[in-house]
Length: 389
Image (tube, rainbow, N blue to C red):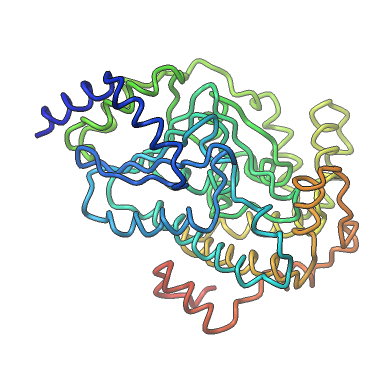
């Protein structure tokens, strides 16, 4: 069966008729395409005109599909149509109705974080082909799986503090485990990584030249017993980048010294005491971010060092609800306006300074959900014992 399937893949990939059909299918109205090919589940993010940014329909489709495919496929492959894997959540669409429709936004985040959990807990190998932009929600749809393949076109960032949010989708579970406090640096500054550096940071696991993605994809479709053979297959098809230097390697000592500080204020103080160009640039970046978002983010990443992915996603639900209900600040709405809608790049943060962003405000953002909703989210994330939460 596998051999027959392999022949079908090779013949179809060379057919001009099928190529035409594929183009038409990819340009269809469906924002996500899900199909089983050769016992492999294939998910294609199909919203290229919006850089495959995730909306409510997409996260629901992917989540429901992963739940349905449990024990039905030997591997999942997720990829993006166009020049992006996924540029994040569609926060412009999400915030357009303001606080008055915050229940819709809360439901979106619930569905998205459920999807993130299903990615992280999927029983068969989960392979993300991140050949392009991967930010926010796109990171959440890939980083929790065991195989994340980057190319020279991959561009990673978690820029949430610039829009008054926080690194969500469970990504801070990963950031918290990076050495040298690198995750604190990436989460607070929104620093971008490209290509090989996405692998060196630990966000991706493998690297391949973009031109070889089609052959890799065909090979994955015809691979026998992925649970046993995937590692060997990937080692033979991907590029060894051990000799290449991580772009942030020269700065890791400084990152560790500064971003290990127990408060955001002290992080800035330590950067200010260093005259290097890197420190100056990091300082400039931080001064543009939402003060309350930075404080929430630092506490979140620190907290997640000892949490499971499920626990992190539950807390992300609490933080997201606080952001969309503006219980502490309206910075999420203001950040989206300034950066993505009006694009004046001049957000009026409230509170406007770190000093004004009190510890009480930060603690309030971490408040539990209403009891019924808290239990609903725990059930979605299959949290049995939430006593330490």
